Figure 1 (tube, rainbow, N blue to C red):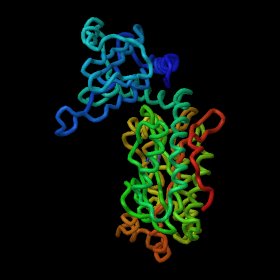
Figure 2 (tube, protein in one colour):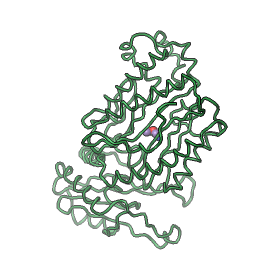
Figure 3 (cartoon, rainbow, N blue to C red):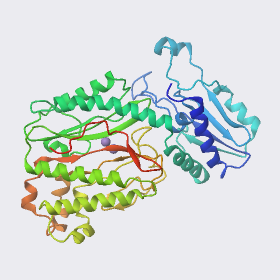
Amino acid sequence: MYFTKADIDARRARLAAQWNNVLKNDEAILVYSGYPVQKPGGLDQTYPFLPHPSYYWLTGRRREEEVILYNRHTGWIEFQKAWTREQSVWEGEKHDLLVQEPGEDIQHLKSYMETQRFSRVYQLGQVPGNPPVEDNALTLRTLLQQTRRVKDAAEVKLIRHIAGIATYGYRELEQMIRPGVSEMEVRLAFEMQTFRHGGHAVPYDTIVGSGPNAAILHALPTTRIIGNNEFVLVDAGASVYDYCVDITRTFPSSAAMDTRHKALYELVLSVQQDCISKTLAGTFWHDIHNHAAREFTRGLLSLGILKGDLSGLIEKEVIAAFFPHGLGHLVGLHVRDTGQEENPSPRIYSGARLRVDIQLEAGHLITVEPGLYFIKALLEEPGFVKKYQEDINWNELEHWKHIGGVRIEDNILVTASGNENLTETVPKATHI
Ligand code: GLY
Ligand code: MN
Ligand code: MN
């Protein structure tokens, strides 16, 4: 069991303290676990059920079609669904419920609501029919997300355990990545180790990009064979009961890499280390992103890919073509943990759209994943070429395109006294 009743009770108490500032005495909140999704044309087949993270976090339960209710007088009431004989026959007894707390039968929810006559009922979680979440419900949902964003000790312990599982996968890759191996073999080697050591699933499709494919941000592994003097970018994680890590390492394929590969790797690594050191409580995430963009601009200028004056290059945001994504995102319970829904119109910083635009607090877990890439679709786009004609050394750039790119990603827990890298057991070359 990963979460105890005491863990769950403490979460509920933290959240109730927030909700009680907003919720009237005669109002109630329902948080739904969700419903199975039918596979198109799949007859009686459904996709694997994922409980809505808000419901799961509040109950430790992973069953479909359940609800937890909150009202200031009644407190928390769980409406649960019994496991049927039919399910036992086809799926076996389910032992994946992390907290065994008997509640009310879900079939009594309707009559219970009728007798209580709440003046208003807010619906959160995976609400049937996906109605829009508005006004007070939006405020309540945001409070839930902000509370859930602060990871508790049991969650951190589980995520450290999962980082240990992923470490087996990355240690294997250190041994097996070399010229002659295919991208798909890299994926299989990683996943074999993580499943073997207790991983339940991969939290997202394993990304493997070798040579020029390293420039594809979410490259799915192909049968391409890795060559000499190439980077192999692997962005791969592991998950247990929907908790996960999201890690990237960029491996050299040969013992002796050329100077351009070395310089690019060292630049990304130094910016990542610098950004990790700035991932502290009280800091605005967009400031760290802007810092990475500035240091990358300075780096590409010194490598001769950019030219001209540093402050002018920063102002023109040329770096967005080489670093087109945000510095990171909240992670933990699913690969994109809370943080997007309350920010529906993300702002642009240094040319990149930041979906996570928060001030960091102790307990936040966030990826720090700077990357530099040579993406032809961006660098060869006519509007880009025209706008940055004077800012890029186009002849020099040609010598870098085949390198693809470098990204390095760790999962950083903000603490009261600094931060902790929960994925530091995953090997990372300090130079190549
Ligand atoms: N693994 C996808 C990402 O880094 O966000
Ligand atoms: Mn990643
Ligand atoms: Mn990530």
